[in-house]
Amino acid sequence: MAAASPPFPSSSFRNPTISNLTSLKPSSILVSSGRSRFRCQISSFDNQPPHWSLDFLSRPEPIHLIQNPSSMSMPAASGSDSAAKIVKKVCLFYSPETKALADRVASESDSIELRSINWRTFEDGFPNLFIPNAHGIRGQHVAFLASFSSPGKIFEQLSVIYALPKLFISSFTLVLPFFPTGTSERMEDEGDVATAFTLARILSNIPTSRGGPTSLVTFDIHALQERFYFGDNILPCFESGIPLLKNRLQQLPDSDNISIAFPDDGAWKRFHKQLQHFPTIICNKVRIGDQRIVRIKEGEPAGRHVVIVDDLVQSGGTLIECQKVLAANGAAKVSAYVTHGIFPNRSWQRFEHDNGGHPANGLTNFWITDSCPLTVKDVINKAPFEVLSLASSIAAALQI
Image (cartoon, rainbow, N blue to C red; front, side):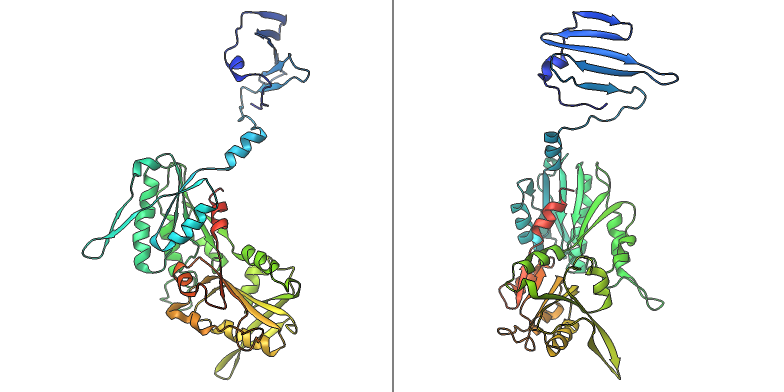
């Protein structure tokens, strides 16, 4: 049934006084209800089911309600109805590590309500978890903001993630900004274990909520083929932190003099379409004797503010080698961006500030997101690091 919003009070339409029925012709009936008058018409064609139409006669422009009894469709929503349906209330739970990010996500939208979990342990160290007011989230849209920073943290959070959909909620969304096993996605020798596949299968078996499969929101997963590791019982939504970088670059005083450098072909394949309006430099590693060194494969850095872009950084060796080769080839400034700053063993300490435009000495800026909360605590307010928050992107993804 296709319908437009009636230009008369809905109460008069719901309860018409059908005391004045006037037959106009065998297939048409006039219905009066107060000051409102309608003409009902039945039309049929050879071998076709009948169609009903309703004309509102008290206004210059009639409305038409057409029903096909054999195939009913949902009413078309008005503009105001569509706007109302776009915003949904979400109860957002979070792990202890992601509390600061959860606060920022909630500040982005009045439709997001933070809910806490009691994260306790038994004497033997195993999790002792409790979801307060579990009955209060029945029928609600629920999300959980996770940080899988270690295998132990993964286990306790999975216990909550598996429990929430069973509480009669309308839908469940798992926000995992950093998919931590992404660099272990392939087997090179017989016996290698692709732990990315293992984690994807675990997440694929999260119980379904009343609204259906779990939605998974993650950012800049390391290898694009990993989306095929997930089963049919989860709906992965792959987002990117690159829009945050683009917005930040537009704010720089030398925004018209920026080139983007990719440390290898893999980074270029992953990101070049999102950054194609910038001049591009591609680096790669070549083996000379027993050493592997970074060289410029394509592009010209001379006189430019060059921003190295990749999805993640661990030890940082490749980024530092790229910085040095770009500086040696005349770059005026060198900065870097990664979505996920992992920095095991505090490897972020290797990155120096350029001290006012000396690219051979270090980086002008090193932008990371808050996808790895423990790193954010370490590098906050330490040059050359600057944190770009995923909060607005997560808040928007929760409305999908």
